Amino acid sequence: MPVWLRRPVRHDPEVLRIRRLLAGRRVHTVCRSAGCPNLTECFGRSTATFLILGDVCTRRCRFCGVRQGRPAAVDPDEPGRVASVVRDLGLRHVVVTSVTRDDLPDGGARQFARTVHAVRRITPDATIETLIPDFLGNPDSLETVLDSGVDVLNHNVETVPRLYPIVRPGADFLRSIRILERAKSVRPDVLTKSGLMAGLGETPDEMAAVFETLAGVRCDALTIGQYLMPAATAYPVREYIQPSRFREYESTAIRRGIPRVLAGPYVRSSYQAETMMKHAMRSGV
Image 1 (cartoon, rainbow, N blue to C red):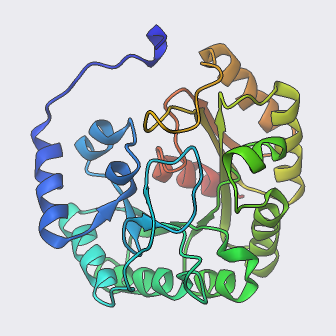
Image 2 (image 1 turned 90 degrees about the vertical axis):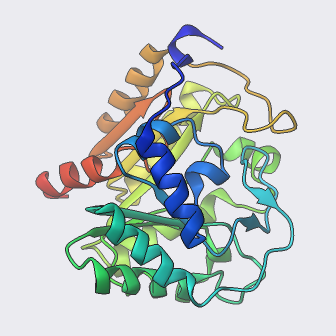
Image 3 (image 1 turned 120 degrees about the horizontal axis):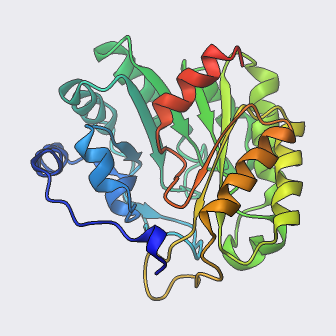
């Protein structure tokens, strides 16, 4: 691994405290389930991205570290447990994501809405960001989430269209773009956001084309980070992107029309989410 990706091992007592709290409440985070490299940093700042609808995914994306298989039934008590953790951590900005649940008629949209409502009841001043799956393109499911009172609607396109059949079987690039487009059309007051990985074999020109497509549907914010293999059987890293290239991607995406862009080797879709949201709001996006 190149030097710019090496990080010192930290043993932070705050990380241990949050791990125990999450385990005790039976609340999942994508930080742990997907093996996020920012776990120590984020837990050390009392931030986490909550993973609802269990921790087993119905899709088989080759870049993801979340378990794949047959998920359990939807837990009606899960939203309340998430809200209690938000309260006890004193979070000001809450990110809620989920595994993909193609087995559910609504893709899990109602559980997203229940979770947003539960957090609002306990922590009314917190801002809430939902990082949603594609719901198989179901517009009713998308509107269920939008109508729940979220501040940010995040949906990752993940990679360039050419790599979808290899990296994201079961997903569709245009379907994801339409989700972001419809979200902005239905609720223009809700910030829209997406994320891309680099190092999967894409070219700079392909990335620039995705930036233009996202700008064309008025996407408010974009994160770009280095893809890292979550397991030995995952899709291989094709390239470790130099930090200078990430800076180029950031400036190119802004020039193409995306107002707020955060790019870097360890940037992930919910990394510094509160800071990105506040910047976008100050900019009048």
